[in-house]
Image (cartoon, rainbow, N blue to C red; front, side, top):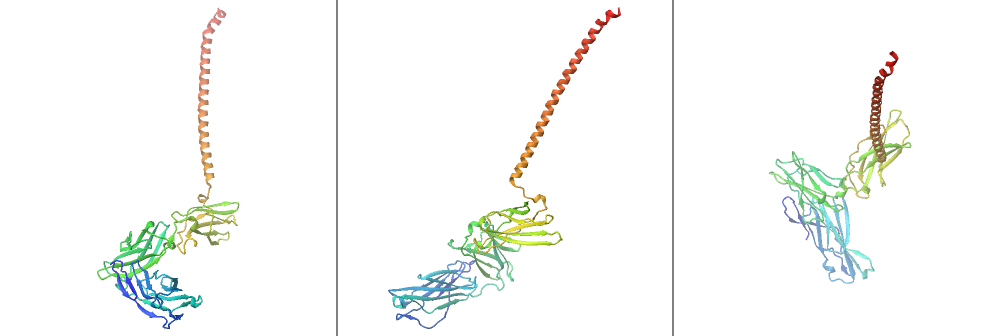
Length: 413
């Protein structure tokens, strides 16, 4: 018997539903006189992890108490998120896989037998297929639309959506999530609320897990009935959007234009970033020449291009993205501010030049102060000497005036 638990998160109800069994092949396969039957008592159960289902089975009765043989099982299931069959071989009697509960759950399984009597050759039994098609529930047309998640700078993630084409009055949406390090599903830690109601969820970095399935379910309630459930399964490292590249500078060194920048802020490691540089050059004939270059495996955050025409003006802007060595996907950051070669205020000046200019200014100010002090002291000295000279002259004049009558009186007698 094949069972499935269907999990409507907002009601927290678990139901067991019987799956339909569709045999792929009806021919019996034997090896060494033994029937290589499919596994028995196959069950698919839903522990409430938003599509992460457990598949269980037992060894077929025909192969019980078998010695001298190796029994394995080949399980195939259809991944509706990537639209392809996945296959696994195991000696265990259980396996867990991710399914989209809005679409049919398809599982195929067979027994693989290898014995001494088969000369080491593996004999595959007939493959059986089980298909479960979920029954549609909820108000028609109420499933949310345009669901997408962005992991901003690996600091927090926002998942947003638009309401369905049909939204009954007084509707309320709920979001639940789960990953493999959680014991149970949890509700959104912080809803993004607009005037129309809940339109998203914000996840702090601590609630996320990279390189693992991150399952989400958005459903809702209304006086007209429950809203249709929407299931999603993502890997958060593939949804990173870095912050804007900062501190962009353009300089010209020996006829080459050099672009320097600082890595974006946030938690994205520098070695995980690739950059796209866009340049726009005003040519002498009045035309614009635009180029884009994706830079990977950079040892430093700089980029140089030759400048062909001295009179031309070249403007740059840059953005970043997580590279293929750290994720399978992601979003480009917003463009940085545009920096041009003719804008002197944007020319890059090395740090040592700034320090030199500051030193010159300090030396200049000190020189002016010393000069002013020297002039003030010199003035004081000069004034003191002039005052002393005037005092001597006045004393001399007084002496002369006192002695002149005495000298002249005998002459006029």
